[in-house]
Length: 58
Image (cartoon, rainbow, N blue to C red; front, side, top):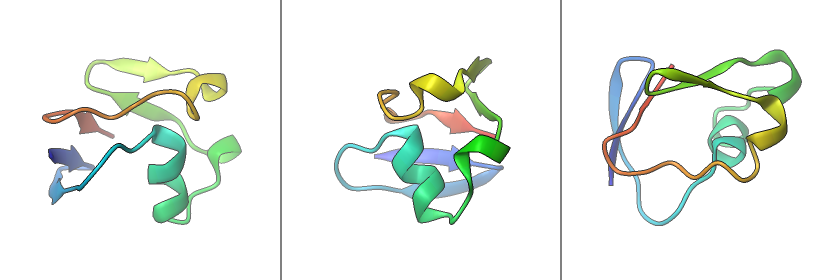
């Protein structure tokens, strides 16, 4: 699947949550605000929020 993270295109294989993406980038969830497409993801939903093909994460 293809996504855009902070303006950079990335190719991913398999399912990924916001929490796993932050972990992969060594970012601390409690200090990070995630915008998924046009909305802000609440911190309590990071672990359950799946990232889909074409999503934009900032």
